[in-house]
Image 1 (cartoon, one colour):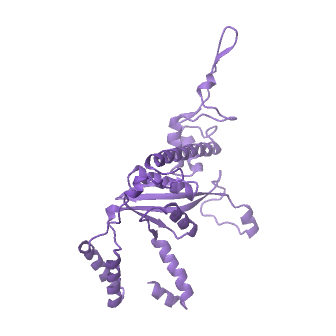
Image 2 (cartoon, one colour):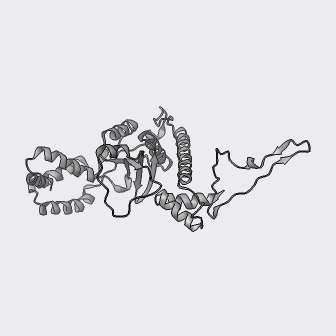
Image 3 (spheres, one colour):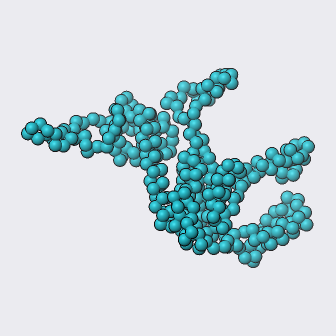
Length: 315
């Protein structure tokens, strides 16, 4: 047994009848395991997962965990910590998948997340709610003053104002739900760190770098935010995370609000979002500020001759 108090073993006993026929097997009380696996207790999972692997690397978690149990030798190895984390993660994903399926069925969606013909939730999605001009004017005035300080012309500022008022560009914050989505690659963790802190790496050729490159695990992460509250979801791919996002919006009655999806401009991610939410009436894609500036830098470098001219336009 692997517990928060340490690793320990105990015997189980079978109950047999007078004719030596087994009536009850003691190991039957425990889940079926393969090989020499240890049974983790609830306390072990809480300490090693929530307060351990979720906060730091497996190597650091195992070091602190075994030290607190006074089992630096003979304690829980790193591979066991990885296996338990993976098993618990698969259970979470399985629960989210089943929960999403039940929500889709209740709300009139098919298992793929597409609304059925009689889906009332989609029919009740209202038009976007925009700020009134009198409420928007103080903030816009402050922005225009800052634009003047940065050297923008009066004609350009007036043109911006007219475009914003004509297109109703600003929506009410309380009516918006922001979904930030991105792909994340995580490198495989090493069992031991051989290099000393601050030591320089020796020069190696490209073949050695490619040969010793650690494998990575690709995940897709979505952060949902509304009126100061937030929730983070993780999936194995874009399709899975979009299913979880839709289920979360349905479960919290957020689909009737203005859904704003923020991405980094990755074309395949944008195409997947547009395809999945093709039935939604108001779901714009927003490019986050970091990648917006990055794209300006890249395109201005192609359009302008010289760094000085490029930086002038970039500012």
